[in-house]
Length: 213
Image 1 (tube, rainbow, N blue to C red):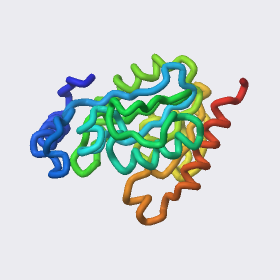
Image 2: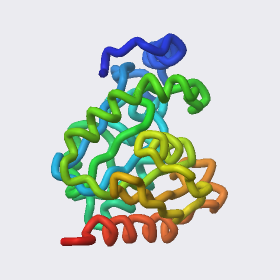
Image 3: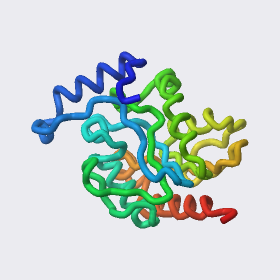
Image 4: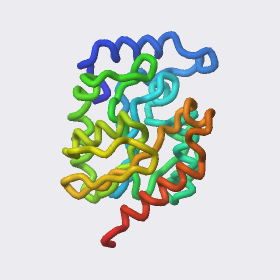
């Protein structure tokens, strides 16, 4: 998966960013490849995001690691008891997840953080591979409408309820999907998403994941 070159637009962008770099990271070696999910192999909860950030996961090699969205995400997961620490800055920072797996619908950083539907479809086998490994999975937290659409397509949700923060739907295979606004700066800086709102989603996800024992 890390070496996949199925989407020329994404390959060109991820590698261009890895060479040009952001000035504050100019001394770092960027990952510049596809970024796999990570977490607890016995997870009941999957957190599904959009795609790696150009100077976050595309730099560090771990999804939601090294960017502002990840700062919000892992603080919330820590408060919910799903992460052992509230921050994720590098692959060797000691972060471990409990009962949770974090992944992105698209595995390579896209220009303007906007992957195309066909790029999502090209990445679908990699998401399916992760899902196959998570034998206990019963709850998916969808961060943003793109991740929600990807999850609904993957799990055959029809008709799908309109995306909104806190919206829940039951997939035909028994998985519960719960939506959250994405913890991007566009949402967090404007107050569209607050920490209590994100905490409420994760508290609900934990509750849902424990149904039936």
